[in-house]
Length: 291
Image 1 (cartoon, helix red, strand yellow):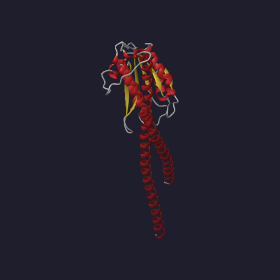
Image 2 (cartoon, one colour):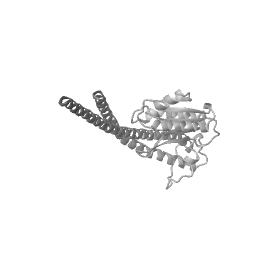
Image 3 (cartoon, helix red, strand yellow):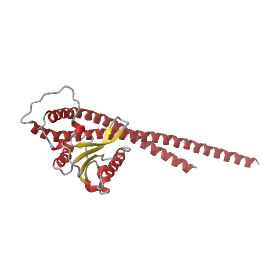
Image 4 (cartoon, one colour):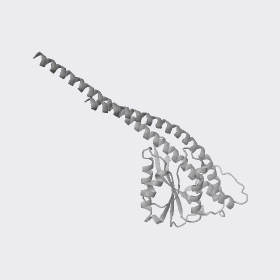
């Protein structure tokens, strides 16, 4: 019984230390989440203003054409997948990768029909281990990534579309809804055709003058706009990652507290049993002496 009590005490101490770690990680994730939300919100006005200019050019003239605005027959697809480098984030990566595999199996007959760009060590390792066609990757991003950190892969993904190495580009990431809800999202990024740009109300129409021409301005702005959407999605994914970590560490802390309560109750019962046994032994010994 004494050995059992020592074992229970050891488990209580171990669980208490683990609870301290998960509680600290929850606080760190909460602080990172606030910063990530602020960065994501600050990035939106730039993309929205650029979109307004692009819509104005694309709808204001019939002569301004660009390959990124025109749908073409799909022979091959590209997917930009955003995951995290580290775990301890609940279902953040597993839910996204499960949705990605389901989507690939539904849309394509073979792995020759698509290519993958991957951001994050978890996604890269998962997909490469299963021999999926990963053609480029980025790992080791900071908790507050700058545009320069993702510029290379974003430019390559957009350039490959312009060079017709694939005919559509999707971005797959966790959309940040609120600190409790993060939703895996499969969103078409290119071509920027009907659902993205045409037929949408932008309020009062602004008149622009273009130098040297609308076509040349559009050819510069469209790739930049697509890259800004990728960066905005990355910031959104980072906010989702920290929210998932905060929730996971909160649940882990609660579970540790519950386990400590159960072990404490078990320890008290073991102590009570030991005391009862000692009393029984004393009473039995006294009865034997008196007899």
